[in-house]
Length: 151
Image (cartoon, rainbow, N blue to C red; front, side, top):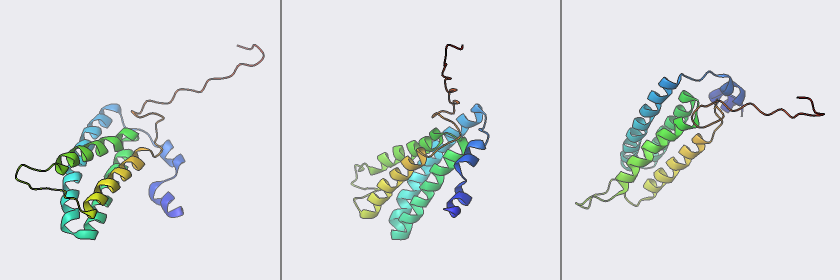
């Protein structure tokens, strides 16, 4: 557990980090969407070309992108944008071409890449972040309870 805390940081450390300005976050969201699309294409070919090691390498690239998006933006949407770009391009790659060619065929490594990458994206998108909400809006203050009629 100490290794994970040293690598990823504790929850208190992540919550203490400052969030980037809104304009920077929007630009990073767009960049993460495009990087997700690129990782999807690269991973589809790597997992086919290099067998078992290729699947591990492709999933490591996905995990790095999704977690990096979460940490760079400080919001869950950072991982979600990367996952959205990854999945959108992967859905196009799964469709057969008119010539009969397939980029991702029905092989165990392709299914492992598809389901493993989706699972990694969902896990990274549900990790605790610096903000209480999806888009980086601060959480509302908790309400005080009034006792004995004091207002």
